[in-house]
Image (cartoon, rainbow, N blue to C red; front, side, top):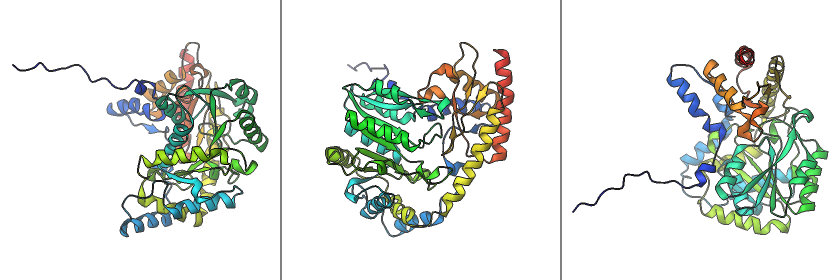
Length: 406
């Protein structure tokens, strides 16, 4: 006799329900708007190439040559030696002791985040992350069962961390302090005394610092010092990539470095072990790391000037909108303005209504870990200044009507 077929849906793992990445998730709403024939202006993802910025030609040629030369097979899990040597030399030149053995080439900074947290944090243990934060940190924590503890950063203080609040969150289960400087999503840059205080707190409480420094070369006033320059013995895992300052986000080529303190030797071994499990990061692109870090960087000065202009246009235009406030960013290509929402409204409601009315796609602040009633949203200001002015005029008109309706 034929057996009956099971027709019920196949269940998915519970961890998927905990996983959220607002920057990409909100695209579903934008696609629905486009399906109705309305143009969408995507200001949700920080991809310079999508806005006309060009990957340096010598990097493209290096990758193309690697492909033509047959370098298309598997590579060592930690990355090719010339790339690791170039990263180590770069850190040495900027005042941080480093050897190639303590460098891993990763599939962008995203994989570096995953490797670091997976190696350091067990299920149920805690990670200190800034609020607002880059949501991939909390997405990875959801996957590994770690607990995010949000330490405040304050818009009234240029989005600098509230150090006393941070201290109050530390428990015996806290393992890692995440420092995102320059910051995504606020564009904040931390002064030296704040950086030293963060390192001191980590030292006093036995925490490892995961220093997200991917925007370090796109400070508007020039490249920023690496966090590790302030204390060579501090347990710091530094993350960066070719994506932003070298305008190659789609190559998924990044790195992490592990400070020279013996206290992190076991963590380094654990990350290498985890890296073995994914074989290697994309091969031909690894050859661009040496070319990027030892070659021509003249594009960066022009990029910083372009970003500074766009940041000025953004800050002036948004602060001119009644009911809106924007702290001036000092690095990267993001701003996190806030709008004074009517009672009972949320930031996501505002963002979705803005999308429906104007086709402008930004990301609600609660996707970055701030309260939904705060009215924050992140905007990517990589577009041409003339285009940005048009966007901000549309935001101004929409916001006036939105607040009038209440």
